[in-house]
Length: 281
Image 1 (cartoon, rainbow, N blue to C red):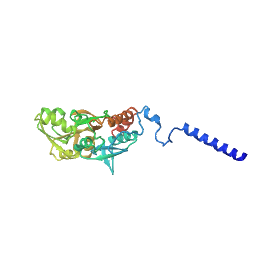
Image 2: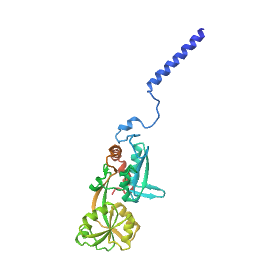
Image 3: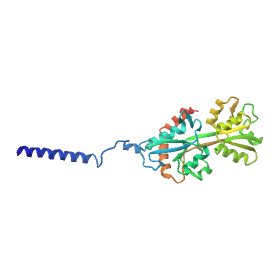
Image 4: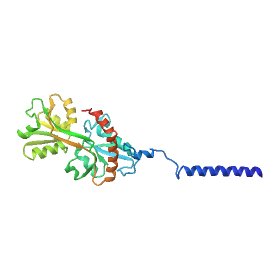
């Protein structure tokens, strides 16, 4: 009898210890994941997020992978500045990044139609685009430049206005297209030839079908390096800010991405990614 009482006392004591231990550990067992301090740290990391996306757990980015060094194909993978920044953002939000490659003039439509969560493709903030989409904080500056054949009569951006009558190649729906249309074609100063890809516009320049190409500076460098007899004029057609586009009114996702992006800017991650592809110039 005494032995049974002693055993019962031991069982009750162990049970009490388990209850106390469970109570100190919280109402539910831990499932792992990021430390809660990540939600408020200095680099803006937000850890896993409950923000709604087109596909649960996935951040879908629409792009046109014809824009080196911001996005381009390397083997079977899309890489570049935008691709790496988007990957870092997705990591901060606890999401998996998926990049969808499409025609440039389909990118914003994919976002507004709900087929993609956001768009990154060296997108410039313009008033026209702001009518259909919302933009994040700007994360990079772009410059529109002019590519010509060596010996061209076009020696500066002023020649496009002062001489006039030139045939200009652009990638359709890009800001190069918008700016040259507004500033030159609408004023009767030039004829704009629109191509599906920037590379097609450059090929038209090589073969003499256009007199120059207006395009972003970084892809311009890549195209000139691949084609002998071309040069970039030491003059700027326009300076612009790149940002991420979201469906208008999707403030929850935009704000979550903005917090992550601002953290990546603050801790130097964005600049390191840009320097990796462009350098410190």
